[in-house]
Image 1: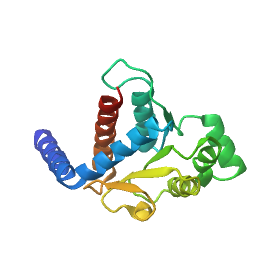
Image 2: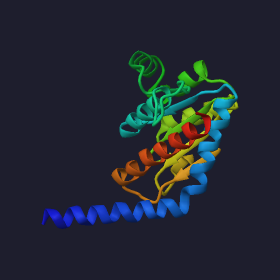
Image 3: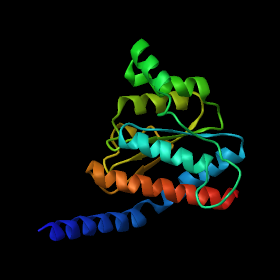
Image 4: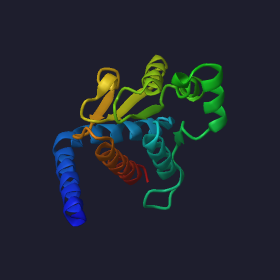
Length: 189
């Protein structure tokens, strides 16, 4: 029984990735080119997300700062999910909705990129972060599930993966991030 379940899950994942390849390759490339342009212009990439998407934010920022495949100079990536003092102070003094937007307000500048990850596309703090970034002329890249949620009409680039369940969405989100890091590193280094 367990082997059948495993096979079924792997088949579903394979189908999702095949659809991702056909439906999202242009958007993934556009996102990678935006990161490249930002970094070449002296900007940085700010990542944000909640839960598993927060972990992805940290992972992708580390790929830029550390290395992806090559020993090279650090690239400017920042996970807005890691500063617990900022997050708890802002959520206590203002609201949880503002934990990322306050950081963008204080740290963001025009050539930066906001890379916002949300499986539902409806996370209030992610929406607030995108709106703050737009006010500061910071380009926004959104990564969501197939619905896109509230992020659909507010991101400069939106990658809607072909899945609706959080686990299947997150599998593709980290793969997209890894692909983008690969393209960025290969181009800039």
